[in-house]
Image 1 (cartoon, helix red, strand yellow):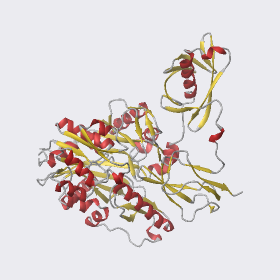
Image 2 (image 1 turned 120 degrees about the vertical axis):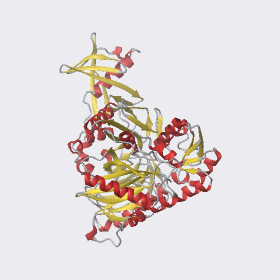
Image 3 (image 1 turned 30 degrees about the vertical axis):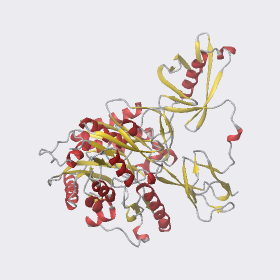
Image 4 (image 1 turned 135 degrees about the vertical axis):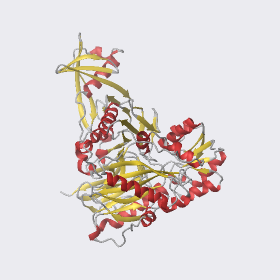
Length: 614
């Protein structure tokens, strides 16, 4: 029986596994990098062990250090979570060789399926070699790992070599394995997967289907169970293929078999020999705890004779610290507040006041809703996200809400091209026009306690804010009857709550301030100084870093004075295990290159200056 378990991972998945361990009475052990010294997963574990360093290659990808940590902490089992070393057969063997239990499939099963190239061969599918124009578009894909890392769509043969190089570098950084392969890219199919559970007594069970079609950069964003709209025959086919794949490698534990469904046919993609990020939707529908099942299977227990029955529908949204309107750029900073109203499930690795850094995936939380029907589950999830309090870096919350309410999604007509078609509409800024006024009134009430405004009580007051990238001015006046604003009646105003009467409708605004950052309901604003600082101005054509990260490479031969065309790649930034291409905004001349490979940059740092050709 397992008494003490180490999770060889971080963040949300470590916290989620620890939650089940506490329910089962199992002692918990965390590992953490220096960047994660104060992370939630390290704080909630019974004990934690430091992995010196910050980069994944020095910490969470060091299997030898993790095994030593497990032995030193007195753990008798290791759970790999997902990502990092979760599909690394060598790590699984090292755990077993150290006399520890491995909460996962046998190393030989991982070896057979964790490499997507070998898995496809096992299922009779061959990768492409010698790609020609006739094969386009193709998908370059990392052989190990997942989460969209090391994946690139290639539509022009001239781009293939560069995309192969970028995919290899990204895969090596994220998984410690730079192997990639090429396969045909099926446009606008549906991503459907099957959850597998297998014990050591020969039972293999398929726990229904999931649809994970809403993806950005080949990483899932919204998932649900069961997959809606599958014919009975196709549903039976994918479940049978998933069981066949598991039996082919003598699989044990929890795993997922993934398919691309197009034109009524299911195309095998891969088998993930680990727990999936989206496993909570299956747990909600079948009323099981998949982590508990993993632990029971590792202890040698058989699956129960009566399979669990599905009930209702569940939908999960991944809340990321990223800006979808700016090429999904990851965001960093302090997460001042994260609160999502019941009755949804919130899986997160953060609490109020935690820092979101540059080293790891920008997912803040998974929000899951379960209801008797798909319509109810989708509506419940959208409402919970809309009402959530999220104070900190920019997130994809608005995109999630709009996606859940989009006609294609509500009608279950979505596919993997959803964001390619609809991103401009889903990210169009629509801030509340009265948010700056509410912020200014709350600020005025906060300062009025000290009598500052009383010096000129009859003069109009104004305050400027940056909202959705644009500057807004809020004007108001103090009178004997209180605060007044043109066209709006101020019903109530204090530091935290402002009520405005707009055309006979009273609107409530919760106002929270953290320095110059102000949050009015779900709208984020930045209070601007009365006089702008001239030192913050940049020359025309300046390219600023859209995110914190590391300059990993600069385009070959690029120096000051080099002619460039609009869209030409200039350099690549790596942030949160993804590489981001920085391109020339106009056709002209590179006037200045301000960074070099290996250099760390902060958001807003000057990268280069391109002078436009007249």
